[in-house]
Image (cartoon, rainbow, N blue to C red; front, side, top):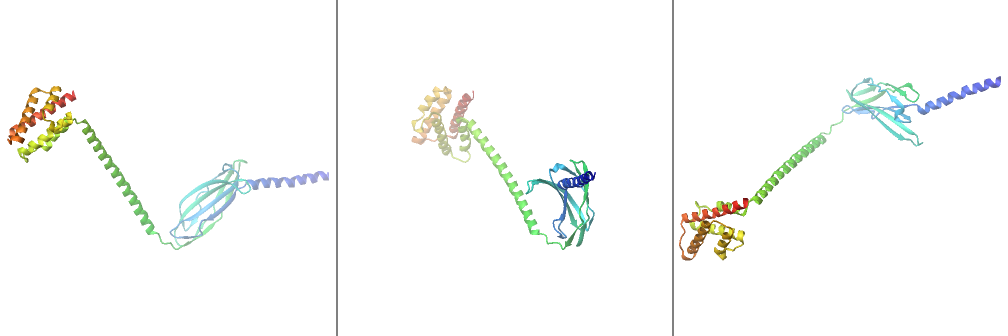
Length: 301
């Protein structure tokens, strides 16, 4: 009987010990601290509540403690973060940190009263609570603000904006210039040889500023340049190879006859010194324009 009583006492004594060890292994460790205990008036007091335990983050559900009671401080914002790591013994550890950011009101001492932190153990379905310590901070004179640094940042931002705007303007201008060049190139490609020589007649002949002889020389150069490009006939070859080509192309006979007359008058002007009247020159220019338009129309059919 005595032996049975001794065994019961031994079991009662041992079992609580095992229960206590299990509780220790899974309990939450609480740590409260200030990032700085001496804080200038124009800086923030940062109060941190750190909860850590062995196991996964999902093991405990932490109830947010709410805002603490404070003295000589004003709450600006708060937040929380989680992290997990493996300790030196190879155990997975989880840490939850709740941070409060306060603005000091005046120089002197500031106090943050302890808060009650409740949590639920999802494994055992039990609820517990912890009490954070009351902490104090000394609020000292404000430190000078780095105004030059702020000014440099503003200047830098303005420079970035200006560079961005100039870059946009550069590429926009470049785009429209390139577009204009492309359009001009396309238009140039669409122009026939006859179109280009019609433009030359309009640009290079000036009856109001040039004499009849100057216009005649200019017109002669234009007409022989055209036949050279059209039929690869040099100006020194004379008018007859040109007439043969025009006849082969089926050009109207009246135009061919007027070109013969023009050639004869050019020769008389050069070698016999006879002048060509302004009206004759206009007639030959009109004949050449008529030839260009006729050949141009044939190509567009």
